[in-house]
Amino acid sequence: MRTQLKSLFCLIMLTVPFSLTSQQNQTSPVTLVKIGDNLYETRGGSGANGGVFIGDYGVLLIDTKMNQVSVDQVLNEVRKLTDKPVKFMVNTHSDGDHVAGNKFLPESVIIVAHENCRKEFFHPGRNGEASAWNDPSLAKYVPSATFDTKMDLYVDPKKVELLYFGTGHTTGDIAVYFADQKIAFIGDQVFKGRVQLIHSYKGGNSFKHVETLEKMLASIDAEKFYSGHSEALTREDIIAHIKEMKEFQAKVSGLVKKNYSLDKIKNEFNKDQANLVETVYNEITAVR
Image 1 (cartoon, one colour):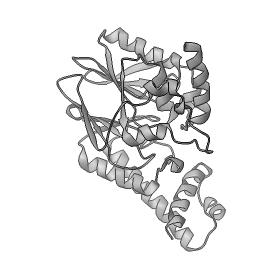
Image 2 (cartoon, rainbow, N blue to C red; image 1 turned 180 degrees about the vertical axis):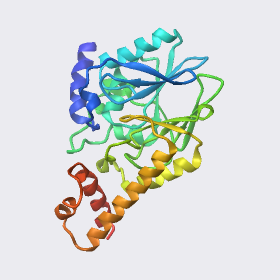
Image 3 (tube, rainbow, N blue to C red; image 1 turned 135 degrees about the vertical axis):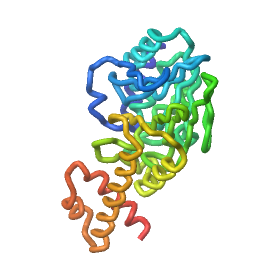
């Protein structure tokens, strides 16, 4: 069975969309970094940063990295801290560097995500290729519990809130909110120090991304926001990101009004901003 899953994993890496980051290439082992009361950020290994919460009743994981080695390292690090069972694993969204490790979890773990995230597991890849998650043998590793706007999970007397504020990076991004600690895990909704990635082929939208972040800040009282691909952000960091996105969009819009071609508009920006320029350009011209 393990051999079969390893073969399927290779196929999934070719067919499930995910963000390419330096984290995928690093070889440092997974570590759990304490960020709150019984709350940890998972760093290192293959794939995005995630989280671990150890409650009175069990353990909740946030995202699963990309391969068996990294998933086993996460579970081994958890075992150094507690012998309580892992009850839930929450996918913040559907990118492969956050979900590919699902298939290496114990089958007893309940996988939770937004309903749009679950749908995106089966979405064709960037180039239209079929998703490997269509394979029936992987069905039990796709989220089996989904929600629309809000879900509360309990591995402790204090609830963990799963919150959906709208479309952004994809259509299924959520915040995992620990209200008593004023901490939220937000997946790829914001990258500190990097150009924002919007997966248009999954229904992501840069203008809705801004609206979603504004709604998030107005709805929760978090002071620290943990991203899949950068250091933690403050509320001020996200406010600054929103401002930068609006200025970016306004600049692209102004050049579109001057009838600049896409290539000419890209020349007005840094090379690493080309993908975001194209995303915003396509969104603007689609509604003209």
